[in-house]
Image 1 (spheres, one colour):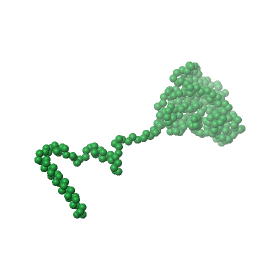
Image 2 (cartoon, helix red, strand yellow):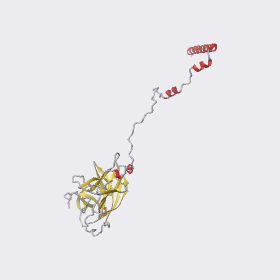
Image 3 (cartoon, helix red, strand yellow):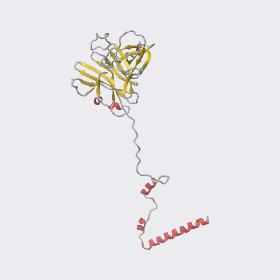
Image 4 (cartoon, one colour):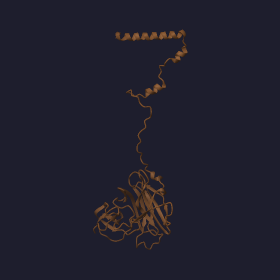
Length: 316
């Protein structure tokens, strides 16, 4: 321990002697005030403090610039479609399965027909977490009047997509739509359809006698979107016309959601009651496929759903 302390004491003596000599020199003829200002301070400057703060525990110097976080994908607004003005969308008018055409809803077309957009209703119809929209488009053609309710599916990016065919529709001297409202999983449709023969005596102002209440949703099948009956997703969700009131026995049914012979079937070889529906202006042009009402053996007619059938594809 004595050998360790001696160099320290010697160094302290040298430092003290140097300080005394400096003091004597100042007293002999120097300016005390100016020497004090020139003397270095033991207190670190603000810049030094900042620099020290930017040194991490390992001694590595860090950057003074704030680090910008990498951008992350934003979650789409579930109600973004409510900000869309339906008049700004590119509409397609549904004549039937054989004819559809784009229309300008802001002006009369070349035939003098005008179009009016109704009030939208909103619900998530395809289960993707984004609200979708059903809104009607009415066509006035002289004394003729048709109104159709279309489903528009919200997209994560870009404008919503119009689904064809329409969910439901009405016409002068034809069917009447009472309401289309939001419901869980899609939209609730209340309509009165006209039955051939039975309702032929009604005037144009009267509603049909075939009352229907149904819940409609949608499923995406590749680039195609199909309307489905939420009560039984095997069933077609678009307008299903009335059918002849006749007795029928169970048959083996093959049926699908779309009028394509090559499409996948939703009811494949199941024994059910089945009655092909009457022809209808909105479902024309899909031949040879036909719409049919069908329900399971042991169930009531009130549990019916609608499917597209190929007349040569089922037995009975």
